[in-house]
Amino acid sequence: MENVARPWPALWSLVIGFFMILVDTTIVSVANPRIMEGLNTDINSVIWVTSAYLLAYAVPLLITGRLGDRFGPKKLYLTGLVVFTLASLWCGLSGDVQMLILARVFQGFGAALMTPQTMAVITRIFPPDRRGAAMGIWGATAGVATLVGPILGGVLVDGLGWEWIFFINLPVGLVGFFLALRYVPSLSTHPHKFDIPGVLLSAVGLFLLVFGIQEGETYDWGTITGPITVWGLIISGIAVLVVFVVWQKVNKGEPLLPLSLFKDRNFSLANIGITTVGFTVTAFSLPLIFYYQIVRGLTPTQSALMMVPMALISGGLAPVVGKIIDRVNPKFITAAGLVLMSVALFWNSSLMHPDTPIWLFLLPSAVLGFANAGIWAPLSSTATRNLPPRLAGAGSGVYNTTRQIGAVLGSAAIAVLIQARLAAELPAAPAGSGGASPMAFGGTLPEALKEGFSTAMGQSIMLPAAVILIGAAVALFFAKPQPMQGWGTPGTVPAASAGTRGAAAQSR
Image (cartoon, rainbow, N blue to C red; front, top):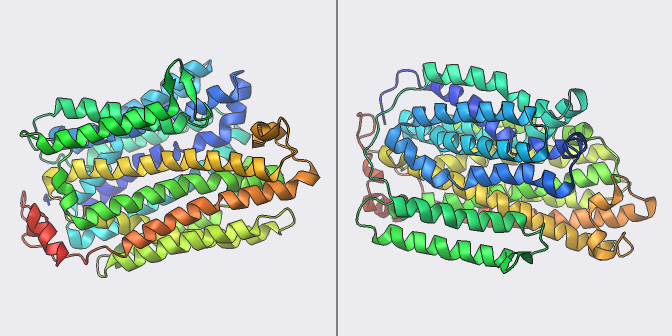
């Protein structure tokens, strides 16, 4: 750990930018119809407004985490914040959808520069016995931001226009930049030899995999162009990533991804856990929002406000949970939070009928708030607790990459499942099964189809409810955190995290 007199102002400064980039992963979905109208484009083009951002965000995370170790997390964070904020201005001023998509690519790259640095700084400026409280703030930010996005998006789109979902980032980015410039410390850098083959293999592999998964539904999981198919891209991406892992193992220099990170049992398990969380949080909102708007006729703002109990409870409790996990084994809190999330989603599924009193949905929303509070901080604290400072950026990059891949998988899987369940439950939908999408009804649904549509949405939400139980099972195998020795001296690596000794300590 590095000596920092005032770590909390540094944390709050980073949280502002982190909150902003996570809001932008969900805020655009509410604005899609208005963007289509304003830029005179079609649904396939406007989907790329979100896909381009997620792709540019997910692919470089391994690399940008390592860059933070090499050049300093503060420099990378500030650079990313400038790129993100200027790209937000570009987004708002875009006159056609192609320009907006290009601007979103730069916005996603700026986010990729910033995200690993937030966890890396927390890991390096807070000792392990106080890091849980700090991760509680980070976790509250991550949990609430994914929920605030649709709410804020609905209000801005209804009140000011779709451009303002991007313009709102300008004052936030400006304030965040000057606060980070003042309060985030310039931490020592660690000389790294840059693994160029590793950079290329990881970038190509992640691009092929993420692109294939994201666009599978768009191309009906078939041919994209000529001999290029969706499954060809996915399989090629996996093959390239296997080559990447082999190269990391045999590389005699300094690999981009130190595989020794995975000798720490808790780090490996926490990455599996956060993948299920990314999957579930991304997947469950889509059928829920479709139900609210298409079956119950709520506006985007009204449907997003149904998530307010979740956001308020999660934001209020997450810092409290963060303080508790510094003193108790976090695996029980994590497992309980993940199980609660599953319970809330199955509860939502059982309520999805056309005549269910709408206020009843506020109850599982509140349960989701308790669940979120028990998930983000314990998972992130468990993942980073034993990371040596020189590998903080690499570990943060891996953790955030797995979260984003989980989100991409969740987005693709729920889209496929919704299509399949609508085809089964609405056999008389326009254009057969291929037309049984929410878009086919133009936002209105005949009374006779509401029960079938509700059933399809309820069945779809069972998928993320089941996936999150995998994360709960994984959390039960977390090893009890070991006391740290020698922490507090600048540049000292805790004994429990030094290579295989950490793994041995945890396996006992």
